[in-house]
Length: 348
Length: 259
Image (cartoon, each protein chain N blue to C red):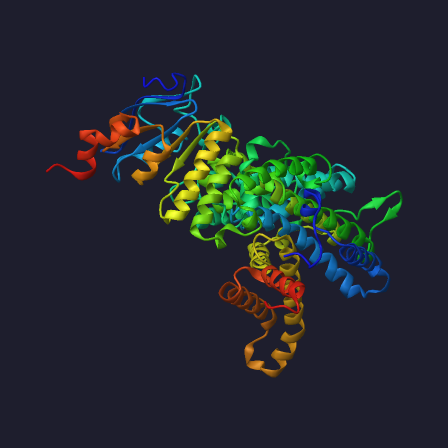
């Protein structure tokens, strides 16, 4: 759906995502506000955005392998752990700079992911989901038992430095994390609208027809897993150097489920949907955190730690409601809204 | 053999396919000649679609071979066969349902495009110019098959006849040297059939490629095909010009039964 009165004169214009000066203005305005945010935003909001941006990167990866390529993965938290540990091991044991460790952890996680995604060559759907859960537990078992990953004690990666400047607070890390997130979003959005992205969707929608179109299923499924886990690895590395503590308890199956939940609520097969989903779940978690002590006070018979249970209940309820009433997620709602806004005051 | 054009593009020799105890194809010999429209007809379950599935690599026969321009493709995988220039459509329309008609056609140009994940991620530069170049080619096919109005529609939302057309356009977008059409007119009304027949003839005229089609509608087959092969229970019972086939006793028997 195009805004009225805007006509394309060549295919380049037809493909453009940012089409009008209003788009450019709002994008640049949003970027300026985002980059100035740590100067006036509260510490609470800055660290919220940091964690949300890391989740966005991980879920972008999941969007590519599950939303676009149709290979359901519950391994994203474990692949994030691979990235976090790779980055931590490289910086603490080998003295590698963060700036090199960041892409390397993406590549290592991607390679592990491509191996982990190998079952997708044989199995689909629910069975693949089970296999990725198994991969999750294998990877977490490994980091708990290997000497180099500090077994159950974990690792303490340093804060990144750049020419004597140390990114040792959430406000300073904000700039690294948000910049990486923006680059990763740009790449993901472009990937899915070009040749490789179409090959992924072809595999998701109709793998037999895809093969007849000359798409090598094996290669592209593994590539989808590689790219997805590259994203997870980058997210893990950023996480490690933001928190500066890495241990296996930070990467549970629950986190992987949360990523899948974000994907469902945001909308499968949509890059903006990743942002909707992450923000929805993150804000929901914060609301639960605020309201659960109030609820615990009002209903003392609930027990001593209702917060943890409340969070899970709210998450499960939200995902169920979306699956029933809007399986295409918030991104679909957003598209409907945009279409009707552009047609206003006409029908629809 | 019929003197139309002795140069054959696909040579099928003693092709036999079996699923367990079921003999689907039995020693099929068939040539697809350059620049012909060949119809493969036969009653339900005769093995017509199975023959296509053998040619494009979904099934691997236990005996016999399929030679395409001098190369044996009997054991190749479907995506390799696609790269060699054999495109097909499907009886039950197997489109990429979540994509628009245009994106379906662009997806079909996968083998003709080169840019990988990295160039695609950056977009500006090589990937963009490649997208624009191939978009131009795709638009020509959209023009040929009169699909301008459905270009940006998600194919899952299109009516049956138009999805059939997207399926044909998608095969054409691969710029194939052989086109296999599996029941292109199934389930269409007369008007849609006429459109489709016109498109098949247009494609044949324009691209000068052999077209093999499986079809049940005898009027269409007799009108647009230069040669007909008849299968019955996996055996080729007749082959020849449409007029010869119409008079063939074994063909009439296969379709109508014995008195």
